[in-house]
Image (cartoon, rainbow, N blue to C red; front, side, top):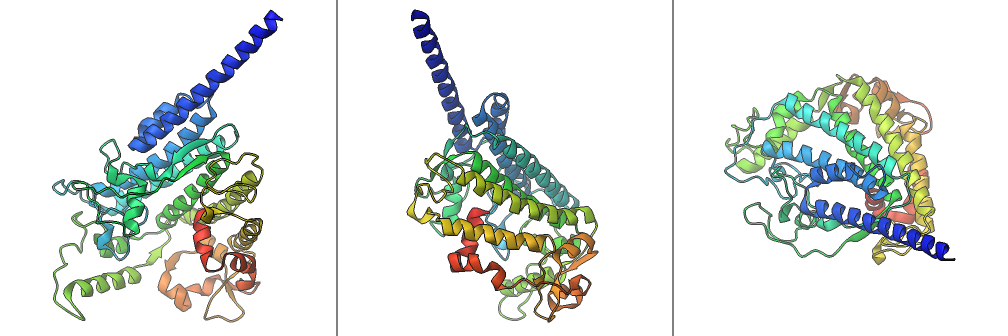
Length: 419
């Protein structure tokens, strides 16, 4: 009996020690996320990942954020300033240029841009592999306040207050004045604490492919003319060809508006890109199909969960953190049906309708696998679409009826969330 008591005590102490170790792991993950030190967090978690499911998730999470940081830091060094463009980038440019105003802007070349995008695609693929490895364990749930995560956009080794996701989203939503590294103004944002688990690792793996897909599509083409004629809008001071020609005379309305219109026309005109890496264009199809499959796997994992704690994406049987995040059984079924239709398009079983051609549809797969050039104007107007048209089942609203009926006009918002 005395032996049994001693043995039971040893077991309880071991369990408590494991719990304490994991609590420390989760705390370390949060510390690095909230300080914007993802690179250091990656190193710290790598040493523990083999025996600690939370650390394995931390490694994958930090690899994802390091990939984003590296691209952001590279762009920032070249003066990335999206508010001078035609739209605001939701990923990198919410706060505009974040380096000190007197910091020298490095010249940007087309080849450097391609190199940054290629490295980004590799980083997202590495993050995906690590996230899927972490998702094989159901023994972790790391609580994270999303809005407190800081991304080291300027490369100074830490994340400033203006580099917190909450501050960036606040700026995107028009909450407060423009944030600047010299006079950052904190925005009072609500808590957004969720417990990230195996299902969420699958979800983030899907998003890594959404981002990598965009890099692959660009890199498949020679977009140097587009880069030279338009990208000075996003990289002022980086030595691009047209940046010295922003003081012309009035043509239509006023100088600034006329120049913006002229650059927009140039951008559209120069999206006539030869395909120079066809394997990357073909890989876009692979990524599209994988995004669908990962979304299915994500929902399978969610529906199989037996816990109910701070769910980032709650199943119908779980309690949403906020009422607006409630997900019903009908919503899940509608989303899975939407994935089925999307997969048919990505597999070439369902054609994309073209406004000009009755009875013929645009075969996305044939385009991705055989296109020698992407001329967006000619594709939209018809001539450029001719090589990729064929008879077959053409997608219509009926193919997405379930999603439209359940989600209505909010379907794109749910697609952004559900991935």
